[in-house]
Structure formats: C-alpha cells, structure tokens
Amino acid sequence: MKSPSSPQRKSSFSFYALALSFVVFVAVLYGEDLSCILRQPFLKFQQLQGSEKQEESIATQEKDVVLPFAIGRTEKRCDVFNGTWVYDNITRPHYAETDCPFIQPQLKCQAYGRPDKAYQNWRWQPHGCALPSFNATFMLEMLRGKRMMFVGDSLNRGQFLSMVCLLQRAVPEGFKSIQIIGSLTVFKAENYNTTIMFYWAPFLVESNSDNAIVHRVKDRIVRARSINKHAQHWKGVDIMVFNTYMWWMTGQRMKILRGPFDGDLKDIEEMETEDGYRLALRSLVRWVEKNMNPERTRVFFTSMSPAHERSMEWGGEPDGNCFNETNPILDDPTYWGFASSKSIMQVVKKVLSRSKVPIIVLNITQLSEYRKDAHTSIYKKQWNKLTPEQLANPRSYADCVHWCLPGLQDTWNELLYTKLFFP
Image 1 (tube, rainbow, N blue to C red):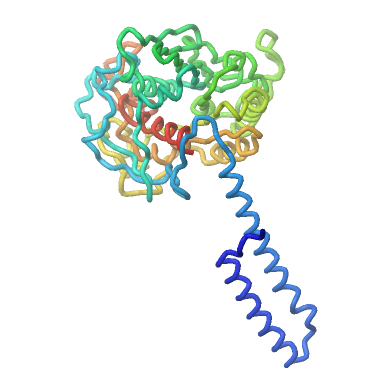
Image 2 (cartoon, rainbow, N blue to C red; image 1 turned 60 degrees about the horizontal axis):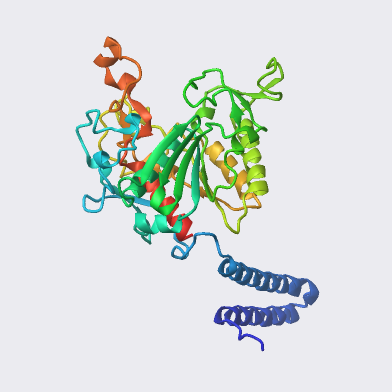
C-alpha cells in the first residue's frame, strides 16, 4: 500500500505545475523552443523530490540507529553547545570542594585562598532547550560493570576529576577509591563495579612528553603515526573521551619523528602545527575504527580548552590576564580569544567526521571562552617557591589555562552526560 503524499510534496507539485503552465503559455505566445524552457523546471522538481526522499531516508536511519547507553533524544535541532551562562545559586554547584577528596591540589581554589565563590554558580543554558539534570545514581547504574576512560593532557585530567566528583557523591564510604599507576589514574565505585580512568597522553600519539611526572619538555618531539604505545592500555574500554591541543601550541613548527625514540633521533621532519595535528588525529581515527565496536562502545572528543592570558582581548587592562576576574563574558556572544586556533578546529571537524566509527565532538570551546572567571589563577598549589618578584606581581604567575573545581568542567561533563544518554 502506498503511503499518502505529504502536504509539503503536494504543495511543491502544485507550485511547479502552475509555473509550468505559465511557461508553456509564454512560449507559445512568443514562439520559443519548449524543449529548452521546460528542461530546467523539471530538473528542479526532480531535485526537490530527491532531496525530500533523502531527508526521509536520513530521518528513518536516525530512528533506526540505537546508540549504546542512549535512552532518549535531545530536542530536535537543539544545539546544546550554543547558549548563554545563567547565574544559579540554587542548583549550582553540584558539590562542594571539601566534599570531594579526589580533587588535586592544582585545582583546589578555595583551599588555596580564592576569596570569591561566584564562579561555581554559573549554569549553561542552551538556546531553545534545557540540559537534562545530571543524576549520579542513574549514571552509575548505566555504567554498572563498565569502564570509562579519559585520555589526553592535564585539562582532560581536570574533566576526569570533575566526573569523579560528580559521581562519587552517590557511592558510599568504603566503596570508592583512586589509584595512580604511572600514566594511569583509576577511580573505582566498587558497589557498581564501575571504573572511571584517566590516561596521560598529551599528544595522544607517542612523544617525548609521555612521562606522567617529568614531562615539562620545551623541545617537543612527536611520533604522529605511532599510537600503539599508549593505545594498548585503552582496549576493552566502553566509553572513551579524548582531548589534545594545549601541548601542540608551541608557537613553532612541530618536530615529527619518523623513527623510534630509542634511535639517534635524526629522522625528524618539521611541519606546521596543523599538519602534525592532522597526522595524530588520523592515527587516532584508525585505532578507533579498528578497536571500538559502535554497537557497544561510545567515543567522544573534547574540543580545545581556551586560555585567558590577555585581558585586553575582552576590554580589560593592557597588561592583565585572568587574575582577579570574577565574572564571565556576557555581553559578547561571539567572543573568541587569541589562544583558540580556528584552523585546529577545522582539522578536528574534517578528520573526525570521516571516521567509520562515530566520534562525537564535545564542542566546549565557545562556551568556555566566556569563562575568564573560572581559572585557577594564583589559587592553587605552587610546585616551585615563588620569587619576591612574582609575589609582588600576582599576574605574573597566574594560571589562566586550568580550571577550578567545582566549576566550568562540571558543565563539560553535563554536556557529555547529555550526549551519552540523550544524543
């Protein structure tokens, strides 16, 4: 039995029939060649029919696709990454800094003297829809017997610790633990048999900065086509969350090693950052396609985390940065800082979109650009003793890259939660 035509299709047909009648009348009146005149309307009508069929096909495919862990859908055509920050001291923060024993000293802003707390109370509000409420117990139930891993640099470690803090509230004392083994940090919720992990790999691929403790290398060298050294530790994981960006931004051409690190390191090619980054992402995609089963696993990639090291970009003092900033940027919805590379964003978009296994990009960059107030600034553990000159000028040692917890990165995980369960 044929399905009835949609009103839109009937309307389209009527319009072209009317237009065709008029064209024929004019052609006869002026003696024009009908074959030339009629060809274009028919082609357009065929294209319209084809596009409608394609839209129906895509819609059918979307309905048929069952993603692992998904229980619903985000409102149609709602871009959860496009919105505004709303001050909310009722439902935010999700937890207190003192209630999460797993936050590292580098991210404990209140413990190290930050006098204000408003940075904890901002809630992300997408335009035209709302994010589902983060439910720790529900997520742990959905992850029962599963493993989730964050892979990347210290910013991804911050997102990992945020996720641990969000979830550990629902785990009784005595049933939760965290352990660091080299590059791997493992949080366990034993009563759920759930494991949340972080793996240190700032470039994702092999590099001379892979030591999880001693890695402050200025002369960075990357094996952009070699990922197995790290990836052997990722196999069997149910949910992967990758990131890489900050370590690539040296301001110089990247050194790409062709041979192994145990050689003489002579086979090195220098290339533009975007080209080296593209090679690394292609290595990641190949590994994902080979090792991740889309019927039972999910893969995410967190886009670049912005820095706020030049306050003049948002109308502040010429020599300022994030130090003493206590409010988000609310009056410039298109604000984009110098530290975020749009060319790198294009590489991410092009390379990951070609993966045969879906890789969902958590596009946190624009919404994080507004949060000049949320960095750790000077309120963190300082690993080196500060000099008198630094103490006299706090801006000189303010960290405008990393983020306080609780804070912005909890929103990143709210978005991850949304895309995991309500894609």
